[in-house]
Length: 444
Ligand code: BG6
Image (cartoon, rainbow, N blue to C red):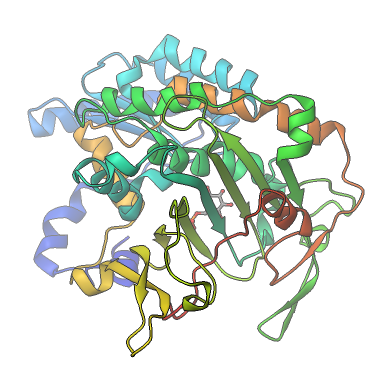
């Protein structure tokens, strides 16, 4: 562990005296999670340590394991009496939390029999990202945002998480999952909730999670017809990236050569409440795309009446708030301004808050934040059971429809593209296009 800390820690090499104090507290215990003996050994080890420390231990069971082991481990922990102290025992569950609504409910029920909700930490690592947490600060610590943050001023919202990597060695997991389950059901819908939620009364875990689940509950449910109109999918074929030939999804190691799994998904959602009625939220994600970037774009409505002559502007741009989550970490407000010169000419300029230019210290990794929160007992950035179920409930009609309707044209996009044409059509038919942050960010 020391050599890895030295290699990967964002604070550089560890100081000898610090490791000297910390290192001896690390133990390793080989374990067969299916064997009751393992849990007796855990119990003995915990008791020994408590004796040595002369204090009760806080115990966190962090299940970064294949999902089929979640129930086995939870039940075995319970049988061995290792889950009884609700104040000091916590369980962390990695994604995927369920495979569909039914399995998520089952897992929630099983965990609910053993643990109280306050002991269960369902991880969605997007919630630990610095720039994602900042959306709440931006929305709820500034008075100027709230009056604009609704259907009167906002025309549409885009949430786009594109990745340039392919599925690679992960086909074993991915082929039974696909982009909708892997990304939209959790990460992208969580981003949507933070953008769309009502202001919570306080920043307490329950308040924040209540307001987020309200959004999911308000989201318009799909019918088989609306799935066809509002949800599109894609799968990457072979191609070239930076001069290197890369395989298509069906040719990845271990992949099924007839696979119907989507590696790209784009969906138009609606939140049916007073704030958002009629405002489309377009979500898209995919692998092997032209660039890796996670960006939320809030596009505002046009000015009600344009007073300048048409020749003052090349292309009239509406105001946009662009929240860039990664790799660039910034918020930019795009506004129209007068270009310097004797004539009145307009162009778009950015008002930018950029992490690099503003802060010296590097932002912590999402997991750094989340695991510390588990230790501190703060559930604000974790998914509550009802949130997970609502998100599954929302996407189930799409999953079912896609499962029943084999895609005839897969693969339908090539590596290094922005995804299939149907994704462009999804927004184009509403008069929009997908927004991509220019690489140098100098101009649009
Ligand atoms: C994981 C998905 O949850 O998130 C992966 O299973 C995906 O398929 C990853 O690549 C993306 O996370 P990040 O932090 O790299 O954007």
